[in-house]
Image 1 (spheres, rainbow, N blue to C red):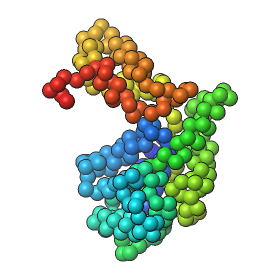
Image 2: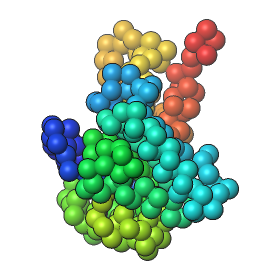
Image 3: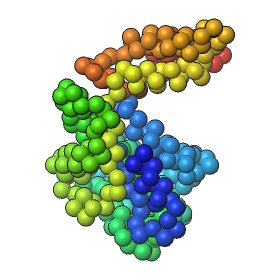
Image 4: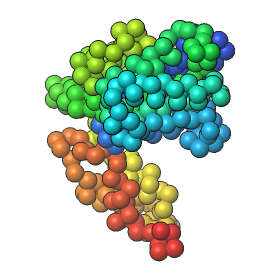
Length: 265
């Protein structure tokens, strides 16, 4: 809800002072890319296929380069992309895998500058997806639940503070000017997923192939899908309260419970 309000306000502003910069943190499978895709779908008709979306994946880009070389590559490619369309969306996934300090190469693009290198970045959205604070978030949530707090009682302020402190001490934003110059507009924590959350992921997939699961025409279709989802949950590895892989393996497990026909593969 917080992100919706912040992003909505930004998109409605015809003259924003700076680009909108989001850092999304969490363990694998908790929905970081899902959030990025929702933002993409909201802005472009062709969603992730839009030519205005530029995506960098940390494990595939510039890992062999020095920091200064990686900074130059990122700076040049982002600038050239936004030059073509100021309403661009820049997604940097697995940002922690890039050479440390790479993001500082685009720090000037994220500030309140009308133009940098003759390019206006103020209408551009930057999304950084990271695993760095994932373990810290999981452990913090687990500790709070153990004290009797509810998941919904965790505040944006406490989670944001937790993430910022973690990133400044280690990870892709260690001692970064992006943090010290307050260029980040939102820190979004993706909380670890409990069984009830993973079950919802399973039900959503089962609903899309309800006939393959033997639930189509069932007197109580919802109950049938729930039972099938429980079978999926039984195949997922959980550590304490949380799924080790979030919802990432749900699709594979649903294939076991609701196998596709050969013609659908």
